[in-house]
Amino acid sequence: MKYMFIINLVVLLLFTVGGCKKSTSPTETETPQAPAKQPEATKPAAAEPTQPAEPEKPAEPAPAAKAELEPIPLKLPKPMFVGTPENLSGVEKLEKPLGKPRPDFLAPKGVTNIALKKAVTWCEEDEPIMGTLDMITDGDCEASEGSVVELGPFEQWVQIDLEKTSDIYAIVFWHFHKTPRVYFDIVVQISDDPDFAVGVTTIYNNDLDNSLGLGAGNDSHYVETSEGRLVDAKGTQGRYVRLYSQANNQNDYSHYIEVQVFGK
Image (cartoon, rainbow, N blue to C red; front, side, top):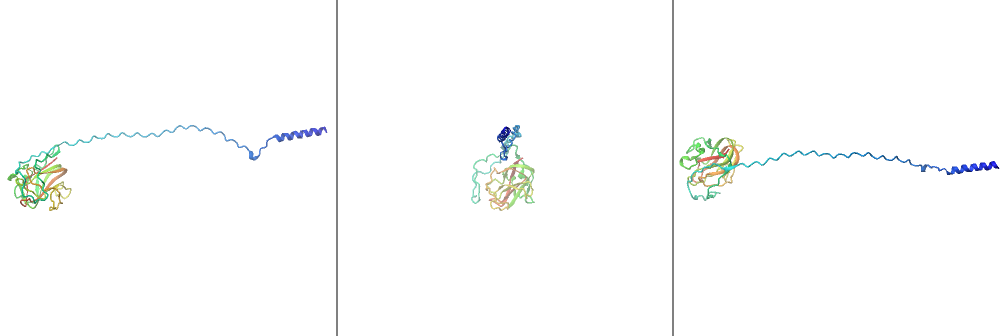
């Protein structure tokens, strides 16, 4: 009996110890903790891209100085008649007299009459009826009988060779101005082509009905005076100057006293 008591006691102790031990079921398996996250190494701040330095802008050139202007060296002949011409009421688009001297025409400094003594040709092959062609560029603008060149009837033209291409600022020409006359179909052209087939610039045209076949013009008819007719050529470049005309209100002839071309 003594031994049975001891055996039961031992069994009881073993059972008690076994029941206190915690069992681990598969559903309660502890998830191993992830290792602590190492702090990321601090990255150096990215340097901002450096903008390339803008190239220095070249200094803007100062505006070119305007060409110095002065009156063209135009010397007028003495007047041959005074007052308002009569019997011109039938002339279409007739310019009224200015009633005072024409203002000076300004052009770049150094401009001269580059037509002086230059060769003149004519649309005809024979000699003029009166005078010689060289009288048209001899510098004489007077209306005396010995200064007039008379050409044939109807369409006529004269042409001046300036010998080289030039900048032309004004052209002044005189028909017969001893008595008040109106010359018709006056056309003034500039070109580098001696035949005036290409590169032609028309700077004056009062051929209102295109009777010359060069195109109808819008410029006015006018009464010839000692001032001549001044046409602004606006610096047109060319070597040759050609002037057309066709009769006048008194007869069928064309007349020239002088042509001056101001340029350089």
